[in-house]
Length: 390
Image (cartoon, rainbow, N blue to C red; front, side, top):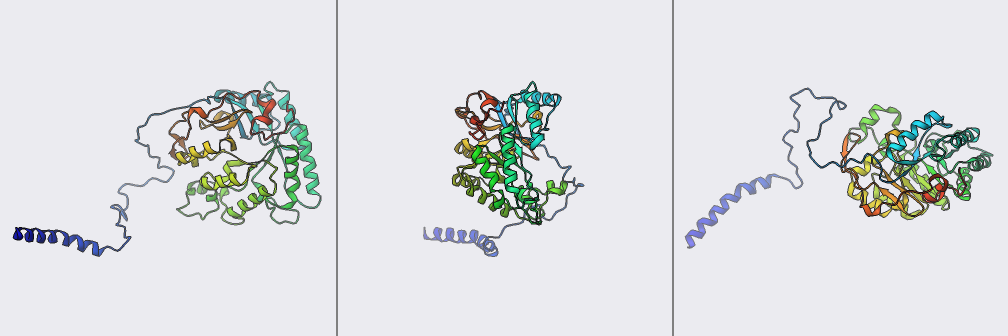
């Protein structure tokens, strides 16, 4: 027996010796090369625009061509004033997608806004669109604050139900002395205070996706977009975090003003950060325009976020009415919240990737919106004024 055990022990040593030698040759954390690393393709490679692989993944499809409940689109850009002919085309697209009310953020100001309001009131579609006013932030200087606040109040009295601020603020607008106009510049306080006093929301677009400000190298996830559209690059000048800091300072300074941050505040790729901003600022809301890609690549986290913050998120698309995405999210009537379509398509074609839908359960869907534009102020997060728009 002892002789047998000795032979078995010797055999075990013989088997483990080569392995020990191999392990000894590897350093901790060493990664072996991939089989194809360093090899060139045997075929002529396509350009990045030509390479469009078709997935072989076979999964059940759940197309949702139309919203289950009437929807308010908080983020749209249409002509002001709009002709009956154009308005009719827009409404046709709205009907096809069950879009009940369109918020036109390009309402302008002064006489043009008044013409826009009148065009809606005199059209056959008077309850299908409302306007947000705009402020010209160029050449801010002595006397500007009082003039801007007075004009904004006149625009609200003329029929606008909110204020839209474009991305030029903070990035491109200059003060009268030529310096960059910061988002939190004290000269702008009168504008935000006017909105608080009149109880109208500010839908504000600050900055662009963070990748637009990052180095334009091959690790930038938006490299192709930036290569095709060079005007979207922001590699110099004000930085992304500077703009975020200025925006957040403004929000905290004006707690009585309700701010809807366009494009999820560009935090769709960082939901933890997006959540902290909501937790710290009860006056902040998000719209989901043009950021569906970020939700689609993190469906479980997005689902949890939308359920948790269901009363702080508004649907917006920033596309012509006839091209509404099937991912319709989050609008509220005066009693309940329309969160997301039931059973959203589990796979959506977004950008160059397939991304998963994040639809919550049927139980979280609200009833149809009622009274629509006449009670717009009380329906959409109670953000708009109490003025009778129509």
